[in-house]
Length: 146
Image (cartoon, rainbow, N blue to C red):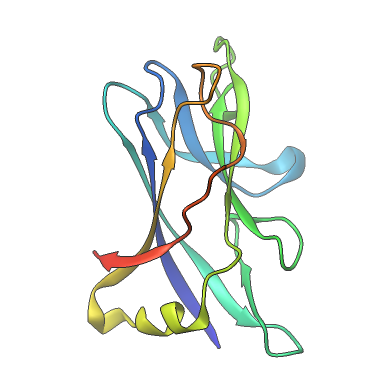
């Protein structure tokens, strides 16, 4: 298997007036794309990752948005200063895990069936600021209509 997997991340009710964006790349050479400033509603991010099989036949993910080591891949949402706003009071990242996506769900996502893999994650943390670190609890990814 070596295909593209289309993903949609919905960040539910993040605190207002904070910059958010998808991280492309890693280390000092990353860039933030799809930058958005939160308001009163949800934020939406759409992206694609590569699906590949490792040497043991297990599914793995690759591409500019994919972070982490094999078996623990994730997507970063950059927040505040990490999203390119040096004046923000926030400097955080939110990890959206890619683990535990069943092969049966990925196989449903053929281009002709108009489905996308979606996750909904809380945008506000327990401290009232932007949610950060690894999403907990994480409800996972679900195939939904485009």
